[in-house]
Length: 109
Image 1 (tube, one colour):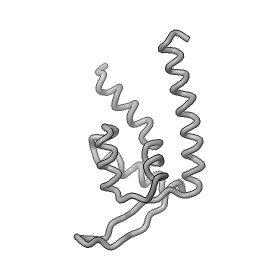
Image 2 (tube, one colour):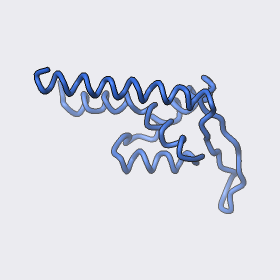
Image 3 (tube, helix red, strand yellow):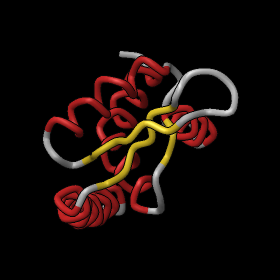
Image 4 (cartoon, one colour):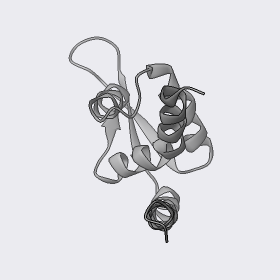
């Protein structure tokens, strides 16, 4: 087993939390989300994001709107819905519990 694969799987596991967290701060164009996630080293392949955004939209966690762009075609901007905010709060709680548990195990309980 390669450590790179394990690290990639851990990042994928928290990507949904990261996307909702970013959108809880304000609406975002897909390219902006990709750039922020790449800067944070959360994703390296753009194709990872599109299916996740679509799944979150279909679940009612996100909505989107089209805006005209001064350069090129219209842009799709995503925003978090009320349902998405509630889901994010649950994910954050689960994340906090998971981090505490992992740290307790790493530190020999």
